[in-house]
Image (tube, rainbow, N blue to C red):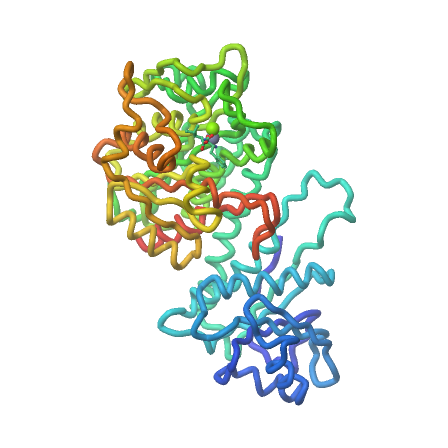
Length: 500
Ligand code: BES
Ligand code: MG
Ligand code: ZN
């Protein structure tokens, strides 16, 4: 576990292996410039003007210390132009510093808190949170299966945020929030990165129960017998092809002085492996379908963070979890399923399984007469075609909940973008023999998936986030390793709920 401090010091007096200073271009208000000038003289000024550093975004230049400072190394970290600053600029810059520490093999790092950049746009506590988040997210690794110790990168033991004057309560609040939230993101990432043979629906339920026990969150786990009693034909249909039984995980957190009597219900798709079923997927990259439970993992992580932060809210989390395989009992194209809600669904493609298990979870959510339902799902490849890997598709029936998520998206930098749910799309999922079919073809495939879900939310305010493109990344990102879960959704949900 990493220890995080906030301390007031001078650059010259601070003893550290690596102290990083965040710098924008033409950074005249930065109170640390004087000291940098004193320590490095013209060298520092020249670097600021040069192509060697120049304070470009995502750049870093490490200088060795000298007899004028107790820091062994000083890292100059670029933030780019002041006018272009975004919340994520700070996370990325802190991540850059941490990755540099990893590369050098340093386990303690100090980051200078850029208090001079506090503004109307960037409040002090949020800024401290963003810097610490970037550092913690970049320090995460999934290496439990690496038995060669040398292959593992060193992780940080200690992070100190250095402030120009004594750290304010707001700085401490931001640091604390970042710690709690990143703990939750790491938990989500651990669940998502776990291979399918380790993390089955039963195992997901067990780990969620452990988390809930620690955090005084109520939990119910519906096993296959209970699901059959409830006639949850969607999740049971999908699970038929596997010898691993499905689970429906239901968490309930009621904060002291909860403001809302009707809960906010979070629903997350929990396919621990999606082979596509009888409508099997191609072999290439099928391993990535262990990530098909990222929506569920994000909901579970968000529940942990909400409880740790003691938010004054009533929140329910529902995670339907199953495998989608092709055993001899597997459901087949042409089958008709009777869902928990009573609606009938013609299965045209067994690979469109996410909407089937979500349908039962969403219909069950109505039991709570919720104030709002928000679901997260790696639901369609079509959403990746529409928005790439940059943001999640947002669809739903409630402008208010959408705008809450849009606001949270701007702060968390977990991007969402709205796709229209015009009624024209509804006819694409009409069935000849049942109420609806589970596939609407290629045109607007992300939206017809949402149009399918809409049949199961009644009139409750509801927003669906298709996170197929954002839940995990092929490429290394500023604070996500390659072929790894991003934890997308946890920070977004927590930000939206903190402001609820
Ligand atoms: N889990 C997939 C969606 C997915 C695809 C997530 C790529 C991440 C990356 C989902 O179950 C699925 O297979 N959807 C189908 C639906 C189609 C058959 C209507 C798809 O997107 O092709
Ligand atoms: Mg599928
Ligand atoms: Zn799937």
